Image (cartoon, rainbow over all chains, first blue to last red; front, side):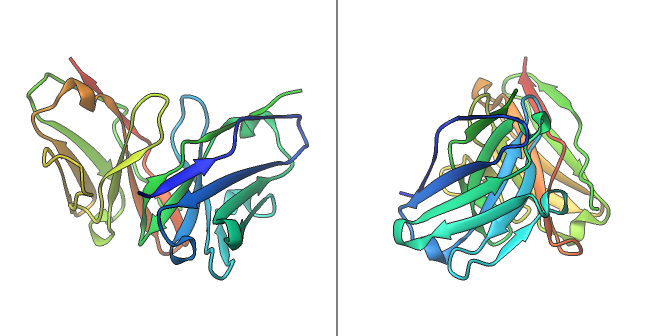
Length: 117
Length: 108
């Protein structure tokens, strides 16, 4: 069965960076793009971008351009999302989600990132 | 940028039908997908490509899309359907995923 298992919660100071991992299993990692989506407490879903694990190609939401980097390690079927220059507004749960055509069919459990001084 | 608008909340009695709308400019020309999110959990895909259901999703969940409005319909609502629901499209002009504002379904 398809599973996406994310890394644990993080606490970061303003100005720092955070790197969240997403380990895929149950399917061929390089056959599906990966989306990253975040959700602040009590707020809606916000798409951050996608990555093609086969080519490494990426597409980022304009809001995060220059501040987000999505990478992968195909040998361990793991995708990464790194977000820099953190502020309190980046406090949120971050999800990886397998991209199937134009929707996300499987989601990770989420990683809480808290930005606090 | 493309905007998807949903009502903040919808209340429905058990056994009745809930309809959640998702408004967007000419949304009928796009494929719309719907997610259910229960408190503290990750979203779950319940309808894709306007009206298709992933395996394991009950037939009570159905979708339609035309003109400027897409609709998720939940028939025979159960207490377990209480959740937030989000619509989503791919906006080809910006090459961005776009999520709706979300609707909270309350089962009375």
